[in-house]
Length: 301
Image (tube, rainbow, N blue to C red; front, side, top):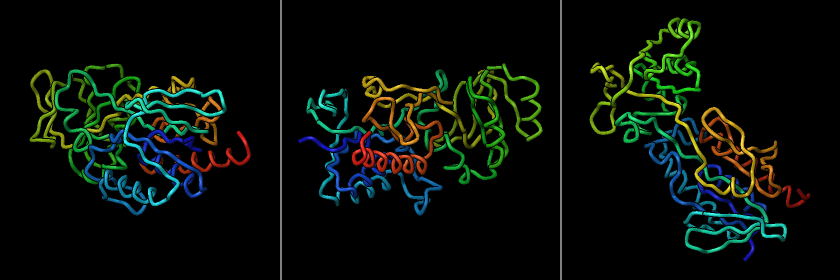
């Protein structure tokens, strides 16, 4: 069977895109590997009408609603390769060796987070007390002792933002390249600057109680915000020849205003195609991409 659209990734962006295409009565296949980026978080916050709901429940509910449409197919698996089929469409191979054919592709596979080397305890606390987005998780730590770890090339301004939620310490992790102007702005905001190198995170289970430095000192911190380096969760955008731009956290698939990549017929949405990462924005990006793809099917593109 040749689908009208193949959506690679079934999280916030992919399911939102697929819903638009399903309601446009197109035959849609969604392939998802079952590892959404926000699976480590106990609850999502700031999402319209879904504040406090676990992300995995939101995804499961959205998938169930999507599968109520008879023209939607869902496949659990991973797309390992994709290429043009020479007939104006695409063929994609799953990790099960099964092949799928579609007229257009939607890349919504998201990104993977990279963590700093040599700091014990970061990965285990990711999504619980080591966090990325203050708008998603800052309120739950209001007034508590907060830390910020920003590695080059990110500017230290993120620490000024985090200070909105509580007393903040910026950990330079022995990267002493901050200029005097930036240091003065941080200090004016009440941000404490800790130049020492971090050895490990301390605390019971996934909780964070403090950050141990290499010199043995422990700085009391209950949540650590960081900007991890990201990379696409799938190689197929590169295989297809899609162009990338340098985003603030990692490479971003280049798209036009209608979410089409530099490869005709291939669209992209969500964290892999946006410089700013947020579940609400990913869902909205998927809506835009899905409607744009349908319009291209009607008007040609």
